Amino acid sequence: MTIGPAPFSLRQAWTTKSVTETAGRKAPKFSNRHPTDPATWMLPARYGSMETQNHPLLHSLPPGFRAVVIGASGGIGSAICDLLQSRPDIGDLVRLSRSYGDLDLLDEQSIEAAAGTLGDAPINLLICATGVLTIDGRPPEKALRHIDPDTMLKQFQINAVGPALLAKHFLPRLDRHFRSIAAFLSARVGSISDNRLGGWIAYRSAKAALNQIVRTASIEIARTHPAATVVAVHPGTVRTNLSNPYSQGHATITADQAAARILQTLDGVGAEQTGSFLAYDGSQISW
Image (cartoon, rainbow, N blue to C red):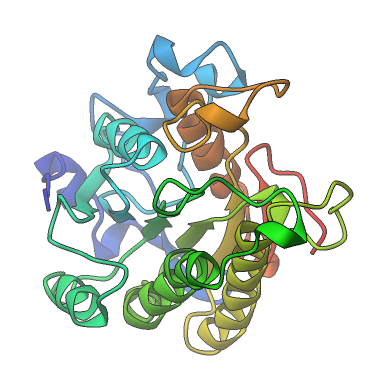
């Protein structure tokens, strides 16, 4: 786990004198005293020549915001961490995975312990970038005859039960007073209504279960965290070790580009959209 401090002047700028009443609650303003004002921050070139190149990612979060990325050692998770770390307005960046903080999705005690290390400071951005496509070298099923019960159980353990336990221990730590966002990386193939090709039964089913977990959790969290947004996000076909063997014939993007697009999408999602299933470009995906 790594934690990086925000520039001191940004922390100073977020005081009781720099808040206004918005939608019935206090919301922070950006200080114009800092030389690296987030409004003028530019996205590094490797993130692509998309709209985000001139767009201040995550300007909707309070200055000095706290981010927690679970799955920080994976392709997308590490790219999100790199992008967040480069922002001048971030306060704390907490990286969690088996490599950072000994967090194991199959061990609830390790999840609870990792959450406990965060202390009392609230989370403004929570990213769950965990997931697996193949189990023990077994590729996704192409037909019913390929279903293996042990493989299917492991798919659900990692892609559904694990994220459910993360929701259990981390979502209550979202900020109760200021805007907060929680995103769980899902997959378009988890959409039931969009399934027109069949196959990949265990993976599809586990991701569909994840979507239901996110939807249900968002309803509960909204009762105690009215400014929170909890969503499932399809990251696109990203060139990572997970997807490379199965991406032929599909348009792909780099992990850096996916990270930038995901963060831009999350920045524009309001609390009224909590419980949604979104693509990396912000479009709605049917359940």
